[in-house]
Length: 302
Ligand code: 13P
Ligand code: SF4
Image 1 (spheres, rainbow, N blue to C red):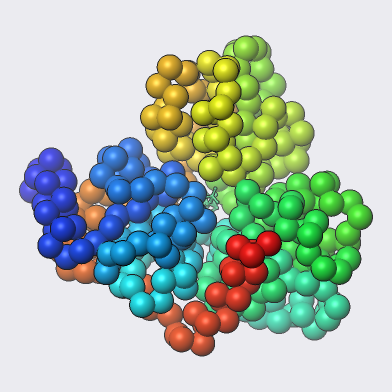
Image 2: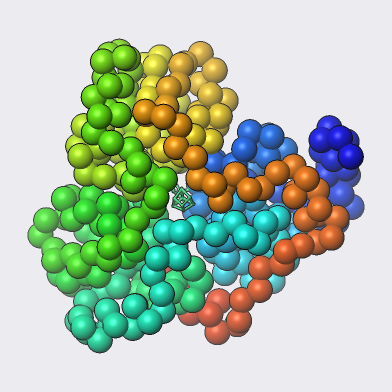
């Protein structure tokens, strides 16, 4: 079937089956464009929690769809590609969290939303890149284990020097590829542009950027800015979303385009098949859902 027909069918099935489609800012443009909402991982989970529809079709990676399920346990949450994982989330295991608990019994364990549900169920507080600095500052106690992203952890540590922060050595192999040279070259090529970088990039990149932010904070910054040129240091798909927000502005990649292969797995055909066959349903045990909700709710309340 041609893509245009599939998009029509998706629209019909959405109504018949009472479904809502939400897509992360890194999805391919065709998937972003057919979604009812696009956003960052937390915004989408909140949309999912507030949705009235019976089915939530989550176009993103697995930990995001799991977070949506944890926040809306009575809904049917579908992910079109069950092989769309996040290598960053996969670099911390339940066993490693248990080891941190044993080694640092007096520390709070604070984890990035990019964690799988079983790990999330063991955290004290969950954070996103948008609120990590704030939450670590406000968290009780002076000793924190931060996981799994070492770059985000280092960024937090720089902004909360008064606390001891033990950082897990994980990383996102997409954002780790931005280099200091990418920033220096971008400054030369576009001297009148603002350079925005995601905190999963390395400190030498972040220290040279004009603004360090999550994908949602980048959108806000670009919408409110009077500048006309922006260099974007995050996954390439985000530029599509930013262009929609500021059609009058020019956007450039920071160095070569950095692509997250897992975010690019979901095609229109996968969305069509996911709705048609109601696949692949995110299933989590009641115990994991109940426990994983605690650190997420703590984050929301803070
Ligand atoms: P956001 O939290 O900004 O949605 O980013 C998620 C992510 O996977 C970053 O690489
Ligand atoms: Fe995970 Fe990095 Fe891809 Fe985000 S960009 S989903 S952190 S691998």
